[in-house]
Image (tube, rainbow, N blue to C red):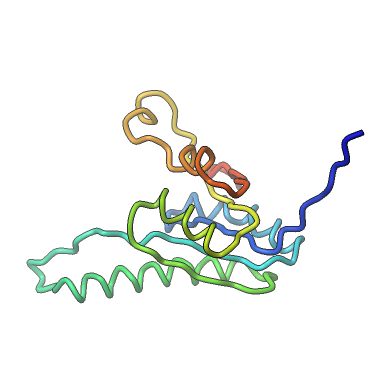
Length: 150
């Protein structure tokens, strides 16, 4: 006879983005976090975008501005989610798919929760899917939330 056990999620990693539709999807994720009274790990990959150097923005200032934007995005999520036992922030630079898996492993997250655009066809073939990559390569269970959720 097979025995089914329910896993206790103590650390939930949520990969976040600053786009409005990701914030909508995160509301459903936060409801789960609140019910489980788990610790919350936010990961946002800092942009490598180069701001307009014609405006006198130095590489150091560019990095500072992008870091501040990442912090403000996570602050938005923290305001929405009240009820996590602990909140941790990770803002690594690099390839999102690699960094999310790395943070999940290093932080000993019990589950990764992330949204998906739900792209199909040519758009998906051209841009690939970050979520698909995470689902296939993570050693941690992954819960995918459609970003179109209300």
